[in-house]
Length: 209
Image (cartoon, rainbow, N blue to C red; front, side, top):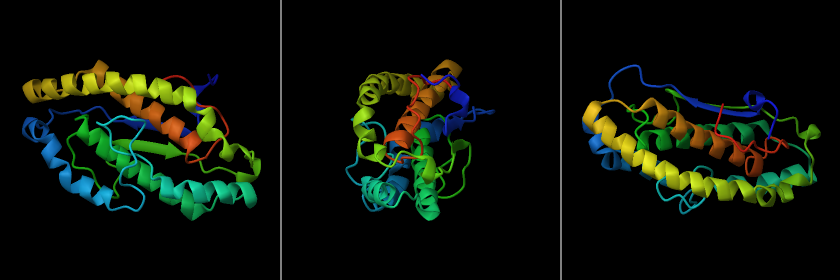
């Protein structure tokens, strides 16, 4: 585990709602999200790329932007800035959708505005990255996949409870909210390490900030 998780190159947070959530749009959330899922599904490489076997979470990072990046890092030891920006904005977009699906927020996911969902990733200096690690990072991250599968099961249960509570009370229980954000944070860190390849620092086994 990293000695200081807050300075990990991948950071994620969601603002806790400071007002009652919309109970009607929450009740029909799985219908409301269909249009933006269609938009996301039209992104090349996005269809059928499930996130660590969790059927209730949208696929978060398209494989099509991963393999070419591996080759660029291995053979040229470069991380093109435009490629980084694409990965970052795509990741932010999908995390906004995930946040909306599990009812943490009720703003409809924007295709470009960050809204209340914050993902920050430090742009890597490719010269300081191990040029051969991209070949095996996905393999080294296997212990995290196992943890994420367990967390995904718990997250589904938490999502159902949170959805019921929002529909009844217009409020998402803070403890469940923090847990769900923590799972998404864990997911983002692992993906940043294994697939976005922005750091050689092994992700911490923690959902904490």
